[in-house]
Length: 248
Length: 314
Image (cartoon, rainbow over all chains, first blue to last red; front, top):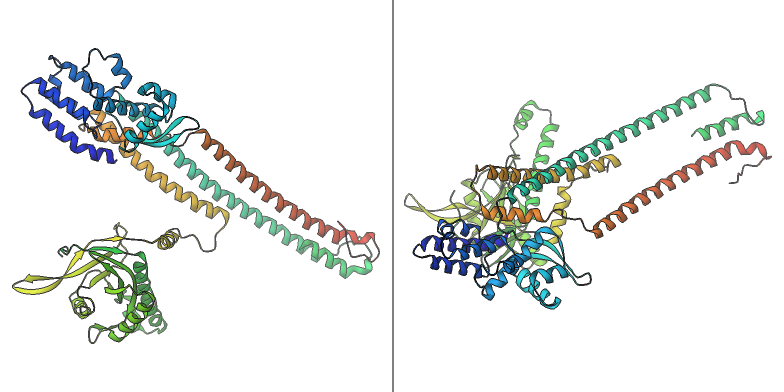
């Protein structure tokens, strides 16, 4: 997962910066703004867990903490509903939030219709939407998929992960255990099929042997006794020849 | 054995490995058969110890810049008296190969055995006039089931100062396996060896199913590891590592991997086609058996209804 590799340096950098700036909360706010506008950074939970940032919650600049949380877990529509409490966003941040919204949408469905995307991302027309998808999502590498223009939908094949809310871990474990159960069942089914194939071939062989034995017995009994012929008895040797042919 | 410092990257083609192992197997089987034919007790006690003799040969390929690519190899005779390889044969073979592959040069030599030995240095030095820094490829013919990598090692020679005396010693180098499309097909073929008589339908089905079974088993094992890890993380035994969690969540989001309508349609169509074809084959089989039976009945019973008539209709 190359996104994670690309991000890890930036994450480390910002975590360091956040832990260093202890003087005032406004400089921490600057760190947050820098982090949320950075073009290749999509993961914020490490920064969220830095103790300096957590302290920011109670102070005046707690709006910035909420902003960071929004970037970690929320979408563009959530931002719009809470826009009054949160500080203004620069265009970089707007772009990033829309990209993160894309990731959240990809979480729920694999096929996203253009209408849903137009609505959620506040984009005017399909052309802008496609530009956004191609340039900002696929070239960056956070999403991989196919655009289907005829059916006006976007099929997602891969989407990078967003930060996990604390409750989502349980869901993931549940999904994993389901997957595990399915593959276990499949393994058992395959083994049963193999055993079935073996038993069927055994049965077939036995059946063949039985019929061959019967054939042998019939041949022996015929050759031993003299058959009452259906047609002229004068042709006895030829009769026997014909009967033998039929048995063969 | 120190590791190489020359910075050359080695690329090995699977043809070379197959050649060397084939050479070794041939020599081994040829040397065992004559000794088993003479029922001499002395000879049999000698041949009971499975000492495989070493085989030697030459490797050829291309060297471009820092990359050494070994394409092919051929066998050479080893003269135990002079401890050297047959020079005239080597030169003749080199000429012949040059005509077919003008780009290939003699890059070094190969041998079989477990470790590189001191006597190998003689041969190595002898080859140094053809190629100033030849490579030595060593194949270990003993099968070690615990070992996951190929038992092939590549050695280069370097001048090291040991005890005040500058000496040439072997140093190991790493290598990569490189394949051309044609080679990949043949390697795949060797990997999926089927029973030579084709077996009945049941054995073929069983072989196919076994392949699928082992693949799914591997997947199962890996999912189990992930599951265990996440459980431990939830209980708090392992500190949460966010980047890993993100990767797992993006992986899980790809499930179910195939569930669109298109897939269902195509799958059912193919399924129906297969069933239809097997039904048709069964039909043909049945009708041909019926035909045979009818012919036989005609031959047996029909003749009494006509005078002298051997022909039957239907």
